[in-house]
Length: 525
Image (cartoon, rainbow, N blue to C red; front, side, top):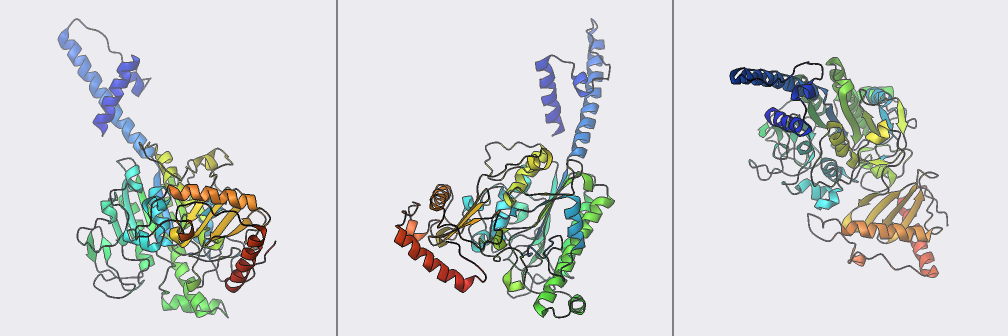
C-alpha cells in the first residue's frame, strides 16, 4: 500500500514539476542539484530517495493515526422511552450511561430505522441503501441472507482498518456450515464474536451444541464455541478486548447487542432489585429493566475504555436501536404510537446518538429527520474514501453536524412489499397506507399520530402515493418470493382517485378498523 502511495506521489511531483521532497515537507531545505559526476549524482539521488521514503512512511503513519475509529452500537428492540434521556420515560427507567453519551454527543430527535423489524434495518445499515434494493422486506428475507457478493460496510473503509462484528448478525443463516457464505468474515470483517441464527438468543445458554428456539451456535471467527456468562456482558467484554488489542490502529467496531430482544432473561438478583425499587411494577417490565441495566452498563464500559485509551475524541460513534420497542417485551415508546413491526412512529423511530468530539461539538439536539441508512455514508466521508460506481440512499450526516445544514432527505421510505403496507416521511408530513387505505399525519403538530388528515389533503395523498409507486418500481422482489407490489396494484400503478362517496365509505371502514386496533386514535375529518 505504501509503495503504491509513494509511486503516486512521485508521479504527481513530476507532473507539477516540483521537488518531491518539498511536497513531503516544504521546510526540509533539500535540493536536487545537477552534477557532472555520475557517481555523485547517483549517490545524491539515492540519498534523496531514502529521505523521501522515510518521510513518506512517516507521513503515511501520521495520516493513519489521524483516521477516526468507527464504532456502531446497535441495541435491539429498545423502547423509545426506555432511555431516561427521554423526558417522558417511566420512573423505573434508568440509563445513566446512554444519557451521558447523549449529553456529550448530538442527539437526533427525529431519527428513523429503515426497517420495522430487526433484520431489514441491519441489512440497510450494512449497505447504506434501502434494503429493498436487495429484496429484503421482512425478518425472513434478511435472516436468510442477501447476495454474499454484495459489498457491505467494512469493504468501504480504507484497507488499514481492522474490523469486528460482535453480537447479533441476522443477515444469513449457517445452514451451510462450515462454508458460511453469509458469515461476517466472508463479507469483509476481519474477526467476530457473534451468533448467526434468527433474531433472538438465550442470554444464559451460550453453548453451540444446545437445541431450542433461542439456542444457536456462538462463533469466534468461524469456529463454533461453547461459552459461559450472561450474553450481554460477554458482548461487552469482547468489545473492550477488541479496543485493547487495536488501540494503536484505526478500527471499526460493530457492536450489535441482542438486548433487549426476547427471550426475557436476566439475572434473578437484578430482577428482584428492580421489583424492590419499583413497587407495583409488573414482572415482565421488571425483567426488561434488568436486561436494560446490563445493556446500559455495557455501553458505559465501552465508552470508558475509549476514554481511558485516549481514543474517544477521535472516534466517530453511533448509538441507536434497530426498530421500535416490542409490545411483547413490555417496551415503552411514549409519546409515540405503535410498536415494533409497524410503520407507526413507535415502530420505526429510534433514539440516535452521534459523537466525534475531535470534529464537532456535542451537547445539542438535532431535529432534522435522518435514517439509519446514513451511518455508512457518514463513515465513508469521515475516512476520506471514495467508492467508485456505488449508489447510496443514505447521506452523510457531517453537513448536519459540522456545517449547520438544515436540509437532508426529501423523502424517507418504508415498505413491506406485497403486504400492501408502506409509508413515506416528507418534511413534516407522513403517509401510511395499509392495503390501499391512507392515513396522513402532520408530525410537526401531531407526533403521536392521533389525527388523520387524508380527507383534508387528497392531492397530497395522491402525490405521495405516486412518489411511492416510482420508488417501489426501483426495488427488487422479496428474497423469499412473491411480488413487491400489493396484489391490487400488481403493475405498480397508483390507485385511481375515488369518488366522494367512495372516499367517505373508505374512511368509515378505516375508522372502524382502527378503533379495533388502536386505542386513543381520534379522527379529524
